[in-house]
Amino acid sequence: TSMGLKQLDRILRHMDEKLWSNKNYHTLEKEAHTFHMSELWSRASYYIHLLNANPKDVSMCGCITDVSNNDIIPEIELLAMKIKFPGITTGAAPGRPGNGAWPI
Image (cartoon, rainbow, N blue to C red):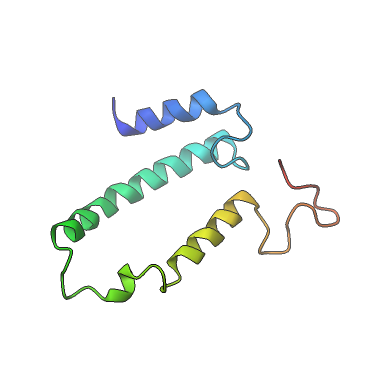
């Protein structure tokens, strides 16, 4: 079975669970997101393998691997907040007057 079909099966098995995956996405959005991320990881895997084969490559800037100081972790955390609470950074967040409540 292909990775795409495994991912589709996983989405369909859990599609009625409100707190599974990106809880603010509809089933079709979950499928699109899953396939998009699969494609992204597939393309990135070439570079990951290249980095693993040459971990001390002098051509790589140290700022890439210094995740404690390069702001990658805070950006990932911000992205997670945007996915979990859509509109939180735009002012259109649920919970504000007229926008309903945050989904639980």
